[in-house]
Length: 129
Image 1 (spheres, rainbow, N blue to C red):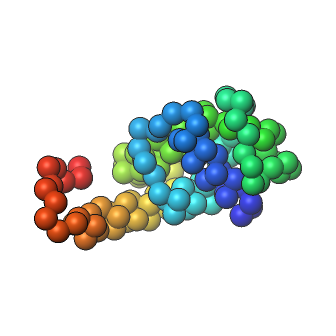
Image 2: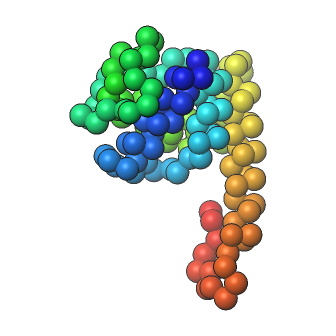
């Protein structure tokens, strides 16, 4: 549901602020697309004593606390490595994961705008990889 998607995004941002950073910084748009279209349920047990504030007591989510394992799986394992996951899915011929290509398009569009955000006169030490 839309509430579950928004809850997942809230959990990711809360985890980043209060617990630890992820290996990849994933946009809300990329997370929204992944959580909406992923063909398996990604859930987990509570990992930290921090509770969400907005989307509480949802019927299909067992806890109001942050589920760190599920967040890492989606953020770092699926979305952050979407190109690698898509290569494997394509090679194995698994259906239902076509949405990974669109996540790669969002990521490429985000990286293309890097130079537009640079302030004139500021040095650039490296480009995004």
